[in-house]
Length: 250
Image (cartoon, rainbow, N blue to C red; front, side, top):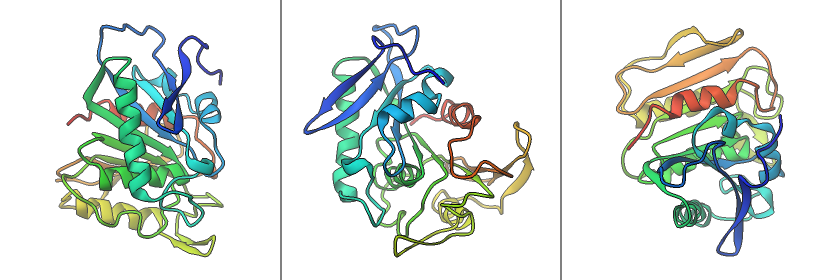
């Protein structure tokens, strides 16, 4: 997948750190846009995320590809930063973008892959006043990624593959640390979001994908579980992410 043209994608300093900003194809500087904060996996760069995820093409948002310290995000055993540092960086990144382009603050979202997918959920946990919805793709949910949550429930969607060899859907041990199964992580979020039911399962819009949706929630809670795809970024992930996020606002 091709990345955005150079004049629409540019680096932006955020304190001593940096993000890669990608504006929509038909960007109107007078229109306040939603923002998608995007977090890659361990060793995954913003440039790689911009080139492969398709988030810019799928949405009408300003996509902000964040660069982690040592290309990692808080919550993993190999991360070089604390949750407080990376949450503050996410807030600062949106402020820096908003200083240059109109931002719809009621529609700031987070999407992440692997380590970044878990950090997207950490943002929902620690900064619910910032994000109106989050999507985790192949998330590595090191325990306790959902500890010390504050504030209101946040809509959550988890996209995961049954055959993921890295973030095994059943959970496990990696880098000397325990990580949660996708279902255990979702059950925790269903509880946090006040859901009243066990999930209802149905065929997803993409062949080989099953959607699991909780009912009676204070904030939408769902997962998309695919038969295959491994630990990579699925071809349908950007469109599924935006379909979910575009209906969320604070």
